[in-house]
Image (cartoon, rainbow, N blue to C red; front, side):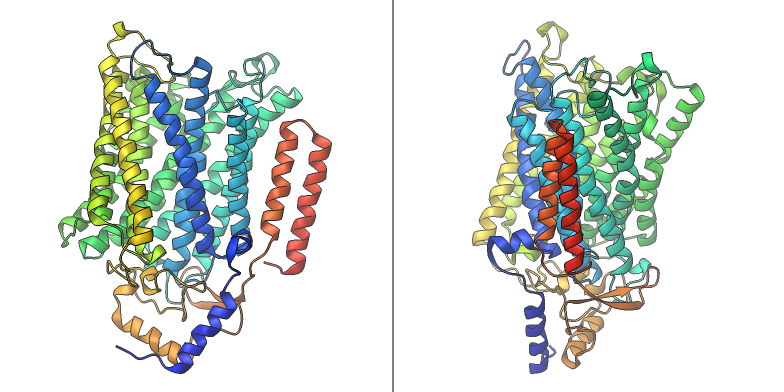
Length: 631
């Protein structure tokens, strides 16, 4: 064991003084620390996940028996719409990008913070405000009610005269600003803030997944935003983008929406891939098989996903040649996904696996991903797609992917990185019990939907007759939903109890391979006392490099403690490029977010002049932000 000398202790103390943020509530409101922001994202998204889960249970309770009247038809419309919007835009995607991406990416690449710390804070406050904006409509009885994909003409003023659809459209425009800011920040951080020595071929697979997701967001969100702007212009100002009588086309909405909507599936699933590629090598006790192919496959999934959007539109009468093209693209996207499945399973079988809770959740993820993928391939068969459009068969496929294949890795990731974030160990027995309850509940909830969909049950149906032959399947689905909820509650109780009473974890309880396990648990504000040396994709397993870090700290090399400093490196090879003075905590991000929030509220209520004034205030706040200390 190498001894750290007094000068090294003095350097660590100096870094603490330089990077430490103020304590208390004010510190959290003004923070720019990526770890604190990641935790803020986590707690906010968990709250929205809880809301979406309650909505799902109400939907399942209404459908548990035929001719049920637990909620009214109008409330049911609001429930399934808000459930979809919540889970996609306010829970799963921001949890992956905002919570896991924010907290882990700088630690995994050996950085001290994100590339743009204040922009990072702004993206969170905009996200939180957009979620509160949408849920203000829920509590006012004006929740979105035209389905999460909000098809026109149903969403136009003639059929939805209230503010329900306006809360949806403006809320998602608002939310999109946050997501684009977060995506830009992650792309720049991954390209420019890697520790010297971390060339692209040594970057963790989790970071490749986050990079692919961020690029997908940057290209997918603009079509959705344009679509929503068109919708609001037609609803508020009398434009005719989707009105056939005035030269518009309702299919324009579908094309623009699904230009976002299908890449969104891969936006959700790619971070799950990244979490799997972090957990599997740790518990299989070996490096990931076919590392370069897996990295390439993650990028290819994002790329090919942009050529698949119209397979959601096979029933609208597209030209045959276009339908065939999109059917072929739907088949092609299976190839990079299959590469990863083989790599995951081979790594486990060729290693010495320890089936602890994180790896169990990844096993559940692989099962549901394969099952959901197999049903997804059937949609590439044009006749099957046309026959099952808008049935519960689609709902089953979608939820096996979105919940089984996306949420299970998030749950596994919570257990895997829990010791790093809290410095405490979780309870393994309760964690495994939570896994089995969640696994059984997920299978029981969503698998019968395949059958009931093939029997003709359409999605968004409020109630049904006992003569339809769907009763038994719906009852099993509802029971499964409550079992799933019980599993999630057990997981939450385990994590809360472990945070308060869990045994100390130490720096690296699982012998993980990536750089976050080099830091203390929980990591200090500055992350790394010395910028780590990297010579492989699994740097924590390189004992000589870690010993060199200790020697560097002792002699003051690669410490960068003359100020709030971080390093920049070259994009491809990871050579040291510059030493950057990073911005410190600031009140301006939350001030800008508050001004933008009022702006959207005023647009919603058609106070356009006042909205313009608050746009000006937001601009002034931005000017003050950069006048004080440019980012």
